[in-house]
Amino acid sequence: MSFQVLVAIIAAIVLGYLRPATAIAMKPLGDGFIRLITMIITIIIFCTVVTGIAGMEDLKKVGRVGGKALLYFEVVSTFALLIGLIVGNVVHPGSGWNINPTTLDPKAVAEYAGQAKAQSVADFLLHIIPTTVVDAFAKGDILQVLLVSILFGFALSAAGPRCKPLLDLFESLKNAVFGIVKIIMKFAAIGAFGAMAFTVGKYGINALGPLVKLIGIFYLTSILFVLLVLGFVAWLAGFSIFQYLKYIKDEIVLVIGVTSSEAALPTLMEKMERLGCSKALVGLVVPTGYTFNTDGTSLYMTLAALFVAQATNTHLTLLQQLTIFGVATLTSKGASGVQGASFIALVGTLTVVPTIPVAGMALLLGIDRFMSTARALVNMIGNGVAALVVARWEKELDAETLRNNLAA
Image (tube, rainbow, N blue to C red):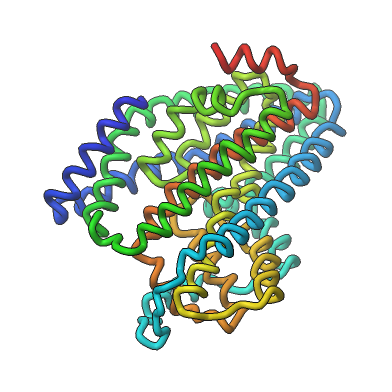
């Protein structure tokens, strides 16, 4: 699949450069593939979590795993926010632009500003509870589905042998759904071709102009974060980050093609189980991480916020920068792997600091699609690392077995 997707990406770039209008018309291919994946994600999460929890003898482990995962998510994603803030202050990606905010079109950001509503901690927690069980699956909200799944898993576990037939049904359904995933993945190259062709055809390589500096800085920061920060975490957990990246190469290429980390969620979960992580742990850590462990989004938000301020010659005090940092710790948690969600979260963050002109976000509109590829990659890679770290933390895996499985 990796080779097919790579060929499709190269062909899409060539088409986008030579025939932009035709390339833009390929957009439904990418959108269709992502929809095929997202339509079954909620079922996969439900079946995996329910069968995992119901089959787990020690139910205290579920709470322990969840607590450890959230602690890990908070520490690593907060560290990513801090790195973005440091890089923005050291490199100054927006300096020298001297953009007059009054010359920017505020209407270009108005659509995102309408979606970026201020959200308190209470609002965020209440949002996790769906209006109805069906509503959680209909909306495809991963956290809401996860809550329903955990409750259902506990209920089946408490019922014991009486619910064994229902548990067997969910296990069979999970196997069938993963069979559907394998069928859908045969069209990954087509989806990657459509998504990449649209991106290059619409925005063009030449249209990047001076924004290439910001893109380069962000990609370099993302690469260093994966190799150094996640690499150090992996080393502490007893495995090599390079072996891990080689193991998930198919998912990496897929995310590059479709610019969405959610497209790789089903196969990433399956691969983590193959390494020896329990079903319940994978079902809890990976889907939850797609909301709480968005390392790529965290890197982007603080770096992009400073870029907008510097480009519009807006001086930020240390207190204002710390305010952005603090607000981003909450708003970044609502940005999933879907393209565009991080941009909305950033708009919501900047509204808290009135000094920064939100209209300045218009500078990032043209390149957001290119930036989202790096964000999605870091998010996906980080969530796989999180699952392995928590599994090692829970002593489900020993270092030697994990290294051998990755090498194999």
